[in-house]
Image (cartoon, rainbow, N blue to C red; front, side, top):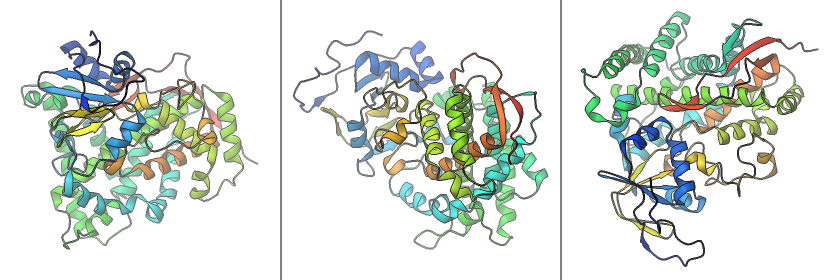
Length: 453
């Protein structure tokens, strides 16, 4: 791609309100690279063309930025400024998903769904999370290789099934795990990006449709059974008991779509982050020892909240989220004209934030490619400088829950077990269905349990 000579303003020019100059045109080969790892692709574009710059394709113009000042403008824009291209995710989570709605409906649903993921209600799930992590690790055998991503996926699925779905029976949870794995493995980025491929003649779509139907049957059965059961403390029960301002409850289809959303957004993302954290810790023995020493300063039977309050543990988790972006960028389109930086974008323009490029800005994060948790103890990063969960009125509803879960799981694993990486080869980041994750799943070996006095 050849840059347009004046596609980036001179560094010291006076800001004027003007249209963002045309940037490079996307060709088919570049679209394929974008689909494989959109975050890395956009970061390369920013390095080459400047910030912001404009990608163009037939019928598409996409403004890309990683500038915290512009991000503040985007996240601070009034509700209704942006729309989402919900057709991309409808096959995954349905038309009622919080991920695909906008405007008043999005704010209405967000208000209803928020309470279980914050405060005391969220902390009620601490014991469930740590017990699930311990049970999963106990299935490992010393000296036998395993993939840390598979371990963390098992943990996060179990947490969702117990804490979100409220599934008590072990056999039923096993059915769910099988159905969820088949659903996630059958997601193909091609039919998400190209609507014309959503038809039975396209084999990946056929496979996906069968997997979704099997998972749907379990979820809808769960909802029907729960209607006749006493209200519990799991999130599904709380969702069913919640009421909108007009007194109405969520419909059966709305519950189904939001549960799929929680599965999609809350299972794989946390699992990938836990796996990356284990990878980085075992490449940096000094960091691992420092973390283990901090955790060992607490009694083994301490409350979950004591663990998640540890400052170095939080720094390790944040540094993992900074260095390894899990969620690909999410383009939005402007419903109205908007100024970003010195430029005026017309209504209909696409806008996206390259999350990984934000976290690689050397003026914010010196030595940005180095895993160094101490940077999060040395200074506090603003909401437009550290953006693993997005921001504004569309910030991930489960952000607090995800951090709580990642910290607890990681703490329990490193305080109880000694692991090592199974090889020296570095892990690559690839698109895994709808998330970015380690290509090989981080192969590791359990060396044994840690004896405590």
